Image 1 (cartoon, rainbow, N blue to C red):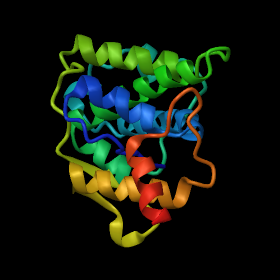
Image 2: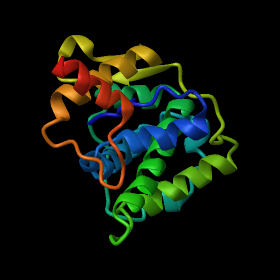
Image 3: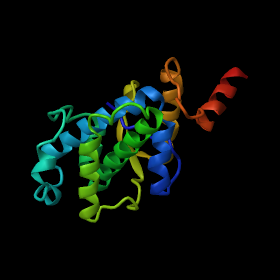
Length: 194
């Protein structure tokens, strides 16, 4: 379970899209399900009483492939539960990943969780938690190296850690269908070759 921070962009409208575009093909599919799991766990944990009180049954009952809450002590879940801004971030990144999924795989059906994620983001928007809300300044980091696990890593540090982790651990399967490799990936390839 993870929330990959791969975009350095601070404009929220650009950040979500760019972060999704930087995910490799496998993660464009996989991370939507992981984000849904994180969001469901946060909702079941009543992390935001003022928000949870008004959650419509259609969202609380999860109108698609059911998920139960889990991994409550995982750094990404703990981070998401800390703030409605973090929750909003995960929901909007998941929505951007759903859009990217449709772009890369235009002949496939929508991702299993895309309808629920769209409903959740629409609900957040109606509650005044919009797309232009400031991005979090700190992120969760949950990579294999236990010393790097954190729920409060500054954006640029999380970006560096995740890009290095992504390059080192994911390059065996990392492809970008209908996209070029991210520039930061190409720079890491060049640095490794020299």
